Image 1 (cartoon, rainbow, N blue to C red):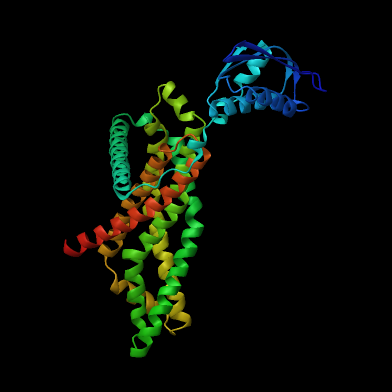
Image 2: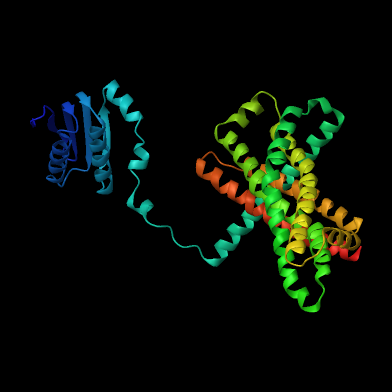
Length: 379
């Protein structure tokens, strides 16, 4: 049958159960719907047919609409129990057909149905397996870091010091403004809250004690670590994850570079180096925020406030905060790099792992802080 756009569909019965369609001419968007109707009408008119063959040797032009018709007819025939075969195909049409993901177009209705909900046992099993895989990844990453660090100690010249100083600038110098601002606000808030209660007992001067001890022991290291997690931890995960998506890490491995030594170690060392310095800045600025409140709201002189602060705090208060800051920085940078290496080859995975890096980093900070608090209390 000729249609108005120049294609021809000819049906030739091979035997009583088999028919062959000879399609010639052009099968394009202008006539593809009509071609489909002709084919399906001829197939359904003979109930004895169960094998359908297509001879496309005479097709001169076939665009994406023609390919879609071919796939749609194939899907229809398979769903209704017919065997489908293409016995002849021009090379130019064959090349075009290879570009089409016919497998995804031929997905059965069964596969499109929503998956059955998991029961409790399946959910527990999946969570357990994911947890074991996470433990394996962490242990493997820690081992690679230890090996890389040992190699660095033996061969310091192998360290990428340019990258190290670059990350020191990004994680340290660039973070000074936000660390200073938030520490100042934290000192102001702590002093105001303490002043409300202590004023009732005429103990205004003890605001200096409360602010100084709390900032140096807890709030300074904790606040600085949270800022590092939000800035550097997310940055490390996103940078390494993007490199993995773009196959740059594969290229490094091909050239003989160890990705952990090349990418993770400079970042971890840089964060560990700048963590205590940022904490020191946060401590001093936080105490200064308390001083501002003491001068304005409590009528305390700067000398009296600072002398009371100096009397209240000890070297151990400062030292314990710095020890925490080092541990926090290692955890943040380590989990950020680990999440970056765990990225799969998709932009969506980069976003998920970056979010996971921040959340995991903050969780580890709080968990480690609790452990340090117990240790310092008893020892």
